[in-house]
Image (cartoon, rainbow, N blue to C red; front, side, top):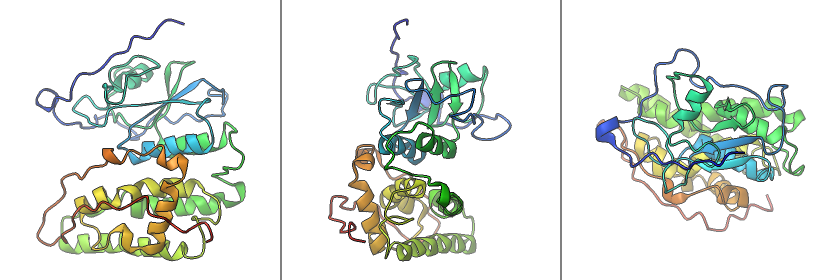
Length: 310
């Protein structure tokens, strides 16, 4: 095997490259949707590599599942830099070089997969060393495949067969009312639209808080795919999503069961070791006069959670 030349993209340069904007490629936003465990992409240890970003909640999910399943020696992983300019995700010294291909930007992986690619360069991206292409950038599939296709820790059954319909149904609601909530509330153009959108999010947070009153995790005593999908957005709620979109007067800490649950997961090694709190920041939000004022809030994630007996 030839030695990889490690390259860096150079500093973020908004003056030269502008801000990142997804390209105009027609079709789905996440076009590469290969699945592990198929004849094309068998579940072979050492064959696949995950590109992730510390700032991206969808990428963080994949890193967490990899750790929960004990796949660190089965699927390799590396980080792109936290910041983007018009070139998209890139490799810089802060997070390290691309150890697999020596790419300077992640766009190179997309162009290697589809020459002339002009679409959204996203993370997580699962790379196949064997074929030299991206298997998938479809983030919901990536965590399912990591959790079910490679074996790994049998105690971490994140997608139990008997619960899959219920998990899928809850995941759809988590996506609508939590994962994408900041975008929907933040993009409201009228006070009525804003009020309706944010109240729907708050109602769902209250529903989750009640659900967690008598169970440690969303489906009982074991962590599932639903917990992995919910938690990275909860992590960002008080420092990012809420102050940017002005969703709720109450911080996450004002939902007692949900806040204790979130701390419980943070203090699990698979979650803590794949979290960089310093990478979380507050983006600029909308300032319409009819939006409620919300300030960023730094919670104490080390506080005892007392959830083990639930």
